Image (cartoon, rainbow over all chains, first blue to last red):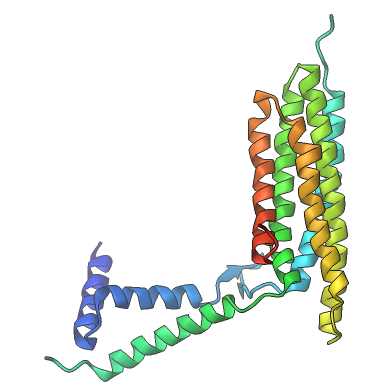
Length: 88
Length: 161
């Protein structure tokens, strides 16, 4: 709670000193945060930057997903057919 | 009026420029195959969700007609999967041409768009009509979500009327 109050006071002071609106300061901060490359952590705990995916990689992911779908589709059909229906 | 601290103003302007530059990078004009690939991944994953929903309907129902409807809907979604794989193959050809600096044949791009339209047709004719039972509502919603993604492609590429 103390940290949040301190942050608000700091932003307010920056707004006053720079003659910018508080909302503008927050918008700028948010803009920088959103624009910063998102970081993910790999299995070893190393932080890895997440770059935008190129078209070729998207295409490869698309192919993998549809292939997975096709295999799963066959499984689901088999599971439905194997289910017991009431007799009589 | 108090004069603003120039250092603070400089920091604020720098932050504004960074965020603007990043936004421009994200919204740069995408190629048609880029638009299709981006949505293609979402479509593939949504098909996966729809399949699970349809499968759940078929496995849970004791009504033969509902089970058959689920089987038929899965068969229709498999048509979508196969066309999706064809589409990925065509996009791969386009990607290779661009990577090699070669011109992309308009007919190849048209082939990709035709496959997108064909997937839409398969959904409308081979999947949706098979999900008419009340138990299949959730599955039908998932299938309709695929249709919306296809519409987004068509709108972005200026095809939808």
